[in-house]
Length: 207
Length: 207
Image (cartoon, rainbow over all chains, first blue to last red; front, side, top):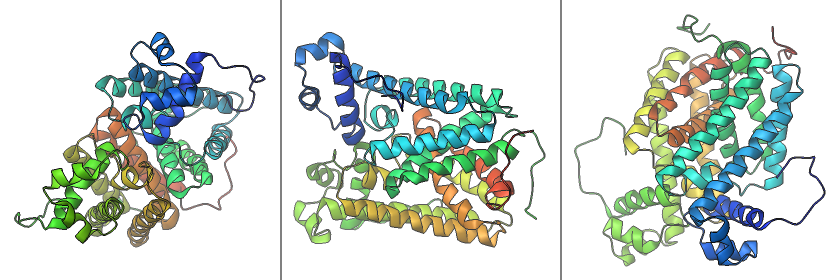
């Protein structure tokens, strides 16, 4: 699930097999469109093991898949931004990482959180979990932005989620990973100028 | 399907009934997750009528639904921006319109184009049609931006699709129509400063 520094392959545990198989199915076919039988078949795991590890069955498994997807994103974000010396550099490296992630996973994948927890017609607690995962991403963006000198890290972090999700949607529609690169110029423009100045007088007309 | 200036209610034609029922189902349950029987039941239309008006059945109907959704968006965009005297005003009115559209439709709705043509696991021609609809939106944004003096209308139009789709995704996740308002400050910031100056020297560090 990591980006480029994976340890050598090892055997997956049963929960890992279930999460890997279910994550792909949920992202391609949606939560409601994925049956337990399909998940078990794809994972090569007997039904009893599913309920042993995930007593709530498909619901618990979906939450676990979204959690893993959320952590993969956090790890990628931290790797991209931790060593950056400027906000511009951080955004360039992050956007390039998002482009590679999209290209590697293929255009068939929705956002691991949205496709599993929001689109799928799951129970209300799914939306709560999605919001919690998004809040974690937003906090991580904000921490990096603050360190890198953004004038309003919170506003830029909130905008980052919007821009990343929109770019992912456009990359899927156009089957073009390069669309993920749009994240960098958009967020740089916001960082440079506007997001940090919410109390500035509003411009009433363009020159 | 229009915003505020609907003519008095009249009886829907059979194709309109089918499109209205199917649009809602596709957006809530996805293309793959919606059966023809459900559509016919929701529309109150016999099966023969579906194939009379949409010879390709569910596929043709999905394309028609996305086309209608695309036209609704175009109409809203034109209404919001046609009378604006500044780009800021156009973006404010447009974002307010998007907020109302989200609030009226409820948080259960995905983008009419993405949820039907991209997420649903439909045939490859679905993605082509989605790109064509998005291209129409982008062209409409660009026309308005050019009239309103944007320095790079095409770049701002492309960013607009990304930002609108991302804001819609966040509004759904947070069940909060007000998230659609984020579209305005983000696009204003881009319009004011950056999107129009792609050839400006890159800023290497923040102040």
